[in-house]
Amino acid sequence: KAGVTQTPRYLIKTRGQQVTLSCSPISGHRSVSWYQQTPGQGLQFLFEYFSETQRNKGNFPGRFSGRQFSNSRSEMNVSTLELGDSALYLCASSLARAGFLADTQYFGPGTRLTVL
Amino acid sequence: AQKVTQAQTEISVVEKEDVTLDCVYETRDTTYYLFWYKQPPSGELVFLIRRNSFDEQNEISGRYSWNFQKSTSSFNFTITASQVVDSAVYFCALSEAGGNTDKLIFGTGTRLQVFP
Image (tube, rainbow over the protein chains, first blue to last red):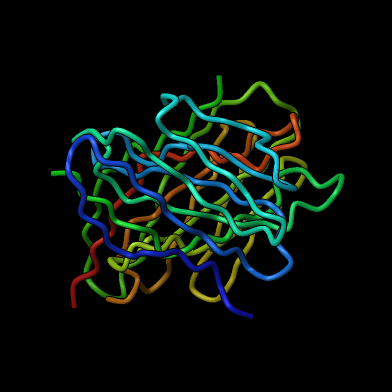
């Protein structure tokens, strides 16, 4: 079974631009979560989507948004990029079984975003 | 508040040595899940183990073993006879149980370097 895929793998943008990152979950997985990883702040939860609905959100400004499609694929968007948005963005998917707390999340290879 | 502490920032060992990575967590939940992930230089987080709060049995998988102790809120990870391929950053994580979410709270990670 194919793992979580993320595109693109690398991205360079300039301040003020916007960017869209894509994530395809493992087949059959219904939940997609996004995390930001930086040397200073470590791994931080951005948001989670399940059945096309955001069901949890981390402490990030409104410039960070996401969505999930009916096939469970997800995108995240960052508008008005700032230098501090440079990070590795990791997507994770899980089965999200009903009545099952905290199903195991499997991560993709990440998208490394550099903001100049 | 929920928190995961990995006090060891970096550990260096010589091949074939045993090494233990420490993880201490804080949570008010009575039901929760703990995870260990490995992040090699490629960047992808690789799932290693999941443990729920009701199962304090230690687990061994090949050269890996985990010691979960609720009394000390610790979930330590030991690699026996370490190998160069074990070099990576290891993260301990806690699920935010309740609220129907898969959100993970990560520790800051321990970088393990195994020298030949």
